[in-house]
Length: 327
Image 1 (cartoon, helix red, strand yellow):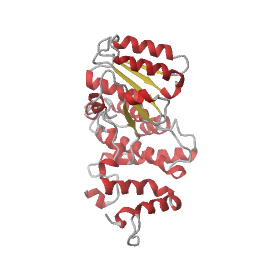
Image 2 (cartoon, one colour; image 1 turned 30 degrees about the horizontal axis):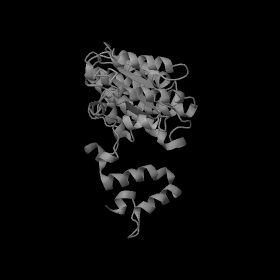
Image 3 (cartoon, helix red, strand yellow; image 1 turned 120 degrees about the horizontal axis):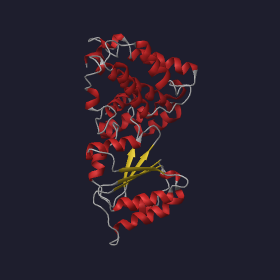
Image 4 (cartoon, one colour; image 1 turned 90 degrees about the vertical axis):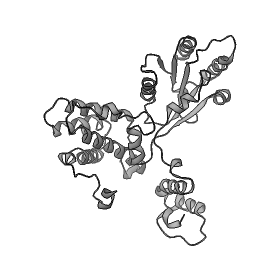
């Protein structure tokens, strides 16, 4: 590994790259994420730096009815939809999944749901927002410990899913008995697109969605452009006020709604109403979150770059760099 390949410039021979990262943190903090990612990539490999989502299938297969699965997440991830999609892929249905959001007054109901599902065939219980139910954790700990009691009947297909923000109130016995799954937002346009198209498991865009025949010959190109646009506006959040004047909480649900809007606008149509499409996507679906005038202008300008008649041409490219186009 060369110093130039890591930081884009030649460093003096013998420079400690680890120490140089600290210098970047002090002098150029906006470059720290990229520098650390390059450091990890070149030292350990792409698989440690490229986030493309989580593989619930692997976690599920490695668990058992007495092993809770804890999903640790940050904002912007729709865990309920993610779990329901996985249940649909695995079991062909979602009726066996009971979703309950914890909070004030939900402790008794949560306990009732778990006890009822334990002995029922193929039942899953998903308790959301455990970080909001600190007082319920001791009781939840007792319930989980009782799973291994000979007096308690547990269906082999039963699963207890828990979600919480990092640093949640889980007691040590719960953590010791459970499988922990970190649900992180993808870093970079490539990772975001790979996750959207299901590279690591369930994605927002499934094969069935991508192959819709009743949306016209332009469906796939506009769908990819919309996913690229979604990845771009989320990536801009990493650059603070250089990306957006106000920190907006775009989520995966925005893309799901946008895809439905695109589908309804193209379904059984003989042409594309670009003005209608721009308004529904830029002013309603995504623009509904944007309050700053200049941010709204930026959002619509970006949308026009990814959603216009030029995108439908066979020789169109999102990049003006000829070298990148060839690769």
